[in-house]
Image (cartoon, helix red, strand yellow):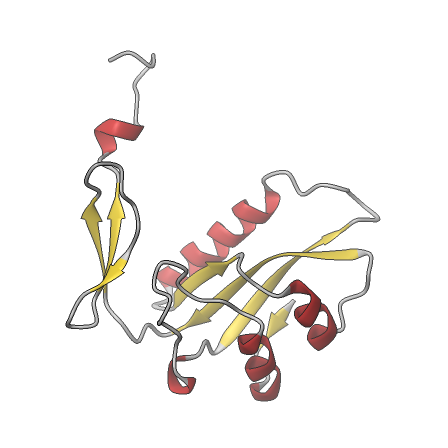
Length: 145
């Protein structure tokens, strides 16, 4: 389900939680997403989404990136409120919400130290997102390299 109506966007925004590692961070009204895509599961067809929701969200995010649009996959959402706001029938589960818009802040991927992947905001408003080094997560042909 695509949401791009101004009034609906405001209602959906109120049902989202942003940046769990930055408790004082919430996008301002002029930084709010310009669209959302809600990924839904029709339980009449299948009871479990398997990996489909994540694959769909990643595909949406990759296409958005190619078009110069920022995205954020949101699992921290108030599904009860969203169901009411979006008038989602009971046979559909709200799995994920993908926020789309134009980035207001800059993000930098840093190498994680000591396994710490908690992101943080520096004094210049840059969000640092620690990532584990490739040699810690990638193996070739066998686990022992």
